Amino acid sequence: MTDIYLISGFLGAGKTTLLQKLLREAFSETSVALVENDFGSVSLDSAILKEQGYSVKEIHSGCICCSLTGDFIGAVSALLKQQKPEILLVEPSGVAKLSEVEALCRNPKIASLAAVRQKITVVDAEHCCTYCNNFGEFFEDQITHAHTIVFSHSEQPSAKLEQAQALVHRLNPFAAAFSGSWDSLNVLDILTPQKSESHFSRSHFLRPLPSENSFSSMTFPFSHPVELTQLAQALTKLQDAACGTVLRVKGIVQTRSFPVQLQFVCGQWTTEPTTLEGNEICIIGKALNEDALKAIFAPLGSDPQ
Image 1 (cartoon, rainbow, N blue to C red):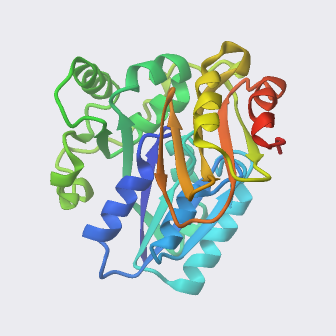
Image 2: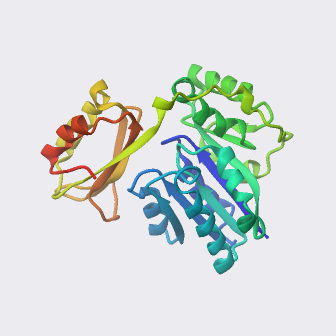
């Protein structure tokens, strides 16, 4: 019987970074299969893992607990039958409900071959309270149904970290929670939480999510190398209300010198050199305005898909 580990977390929280740490420090000598679900059409996380030599099953352009339910059940059951891994690591989309992903794993086609052993949610301490206020049920579901909470951006004590810890404890007092530098984090502590687990439903505590809060994504491929200064100027414009609420941007961008990996979360962005191929970005958010976004990126040589 394969053990399933669900690595949950909202957009840009650091799920893939934690997954890489688990692969290096806990499962390096174990047969492991990975399933990656990207909400947009750009599978950057999968590309990073593949570059490191891991075999990854990709399910993208949607959420596995919504439009891609059948894809997930079929893909996972086939993977389990073919590879028979000891461990299956599943990283759902950042806008997936952890409770619904777990429910999919109880489907007879999967449950006859594997069982969920651990549910881990990565919480961005810097933006935790903002996300909870703005995205209610999606965000809270990932916390209330987790066995273990791992805070990212929690290297130093801060008021925001204390607020995030208090909020998480209120939503899920049964979860083991870890903060601080991930370099010193013991993965065995994450995988074997000490706090008692409770499996009763707490869904009635969740605040409903208004229908207008649905998420969407847009992909912008570039037809030629992009100047980093122009890209930086374009990214600063994403905070304009006319664009909608831009939560996450990720992708590979070919500059005139070398390709870079782009990460953008809550108005903050980084680039780092990469050997990955591609020249496109994916924007994920709420009520995205195609015309406004096209006006920003068209001068860089892009048309949305």
